[in-house]
Image 1 (cartoon, one colour):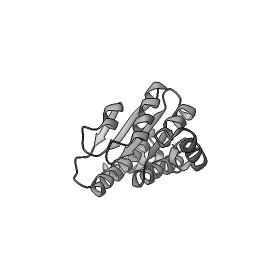
Image 2 (tube, rainbow, N blue to C red; image 1 turned 45 degrees about the vertical axis):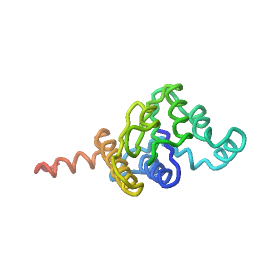
Image 3 (cartoon, rainbow, N blue to C red; image 1 turned 135 degrees about the horizontal axis):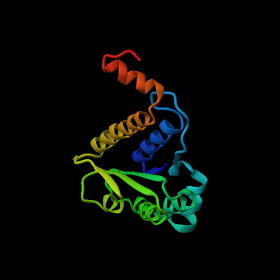
Length: 161
């Protein structure tokens, strides 16, 4: 999984990758997840040599492989560097997911799937994106059938594991 965002959305992208490389709630194997904005040397070199609009697209072209997932977070859905990353991701065979603010917006249109939060403030969009990130992690763990997740579901259903 590759993830990117700008500002607060970058922090949330990094939160997502940390949960996948480490763990969310239950022990499980580590999974490959990279926050593209955290690659500061690459980010600044690409920005200097190619322009800020290319800082993510160039990294997606370098690191993305067919079948990988690219998650892009933007409260406006209008960040040129994220739209460029979505285009590069699709071109490279990645599945592109976007978490954005109100639709329609260019990032949602460039992605395969988009969660567009209809809210009036950036803060509210970011709060909803954090919930979405946690739900994604919860779903990931459940899909893996981690032992603890299976036990928890059984306990909630009133059965002992």
